[in-house]
Length: 316
Image (cartoon, rainbow, N blue to C red; front, side, top):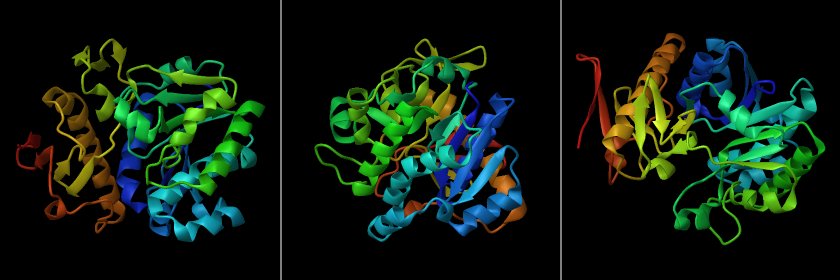
């Protein structure tokens, strides 16, 4: 790959998921570096105790200038994290000159294969975005492209794009829908028109998610998973929730197909269970990132890890 740099922004509620993400990178790459912006001290201190290799932890106050601080009081935590994305990527380029390219990863992504195919798809373009490949009504509300997996190279074109995106996100980064804006994401619709050298990735196994595999043929072959004919590279586990260390809602948005659950979601549960054990070694009382099952009106895909059988059970 270009130079194997990845970055993410997390708070304590995403810590377990990001550890699973890190392990998935480790399982499929010989060399990489993950830059983690920690929104709170709990995240920073616990990750420091765990001592992950090939990572750099950056406290959020290191990247907060006066313009960023000015918008912070009026935004929800998720909106603020979205606002930080272009700010953070620019900070990394400006302060770490060894980074020639970087890929931003949402904390609930997970790699099933080596990301080299992602690099091949990106090619020589300045930036890449991934198609949503979602229903028309979803694209109309949230945009044509997905901001949870996005890449930039160190060139004039990408820097101009990042600065434009930063300014838009500081102006508005709301979870409320309107015609032209939603979060940090709908701004991406304008990039192919405003900037040169934007690669749109349509590979079905890159940024696969519940919203774009619903009607696809997902199958296993030779210990690999395929979405139609494309190998599954990285999956976006949007809507995955943990109730307890043994109880999970696989996707809070809709009912999933059974073979998708078996091939994609069950391995993720096992990965999450593994990192729970990692965290327990340094903080046996860690409880962040868990939802309350009794507060849910609907649970679509309840799964339980049976400790005695050491297997995952999907319940109706």
